[in-house]
Amino acid sequence: MLGIQKKNIHKRRTLPLVGPSVASLLLWMLVPLVMTLWFSFQRYQLLSPQNRGFIGWSNYSYLLSDPALWTALVNTLVLSGVVLIITVVLGLGLALLFAQDFPGNSVARILAISPFFVMPTVSALVWKNMLMHPVNGLFAFWSSLVGLPAIDWFGDWPMVSIILIVSWQWTPFALLVLMTALQSVDPQQKEAAYLDGAGTFAVFIHVVLPHIKRAIAMVVMIEMMFFLTIFAEIFVTTNGGPGLSTTNLAFLIYIRALLDFDIGVASAGGIIAIVLANIVAIFLIRTVAKSMDA
Image: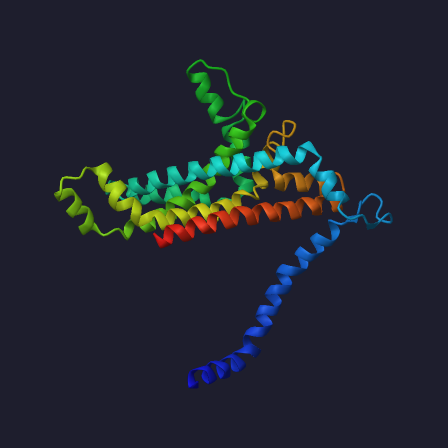
């Protein structure tokens, strides 16, 4: 009884301090969401702003009958899934490599992490103009050295090009998290496993991997949230094309809002994106929870 009274007194004392922060945070999150939901039920064309009104589910029915939406959804899932696999596998491999002692380890580690600190727009420009350019790019130069024709990356392999750029930028994030997790592996457990006759692969599967699976689960969850909203790399390099081959959901919303000037349809697309993100988040959170309980 005395403990409950103390808790109530503590809540009354802290409420004036915490209340404004919580209220500001709720307003900051809820106002854009409520406005997006409101606009999704409105006829709101920027080219004819006077012709506005409530139109019910028309924006949603129009968008759901648009083949571009389903193409964008497939592109979003393919782009997010492939980049996620590449970054986690490559990040884990690099983390295992940098866990070994070799000359220049610290310098190589800094160089491997540095792409994460490059702005997405800048990295897209570098890859587009200095590496993948079919005439002046470094890849075209290497191709000419072995007598092969240059590849028009953004014309012939647009989705592969976007995947390479995003993977290059986000692999260091997985590397940072997994490298930290590897440093906390108990060396005595590894030594005991080696003394019992286990090989390097068996030690990795039965000692190292169970220890870092929580870190892997966190990397998967955080990266997926960002990969669902990839925009700058697509805008700078392919502009969603050729056709709709690299248009993901975020870029489709941009097209409807700022190229078609249809705020109502774009808002409906935003709500669909929120629903998709929540479905993915629920799935990932359950996966992470199971990993932590194991």
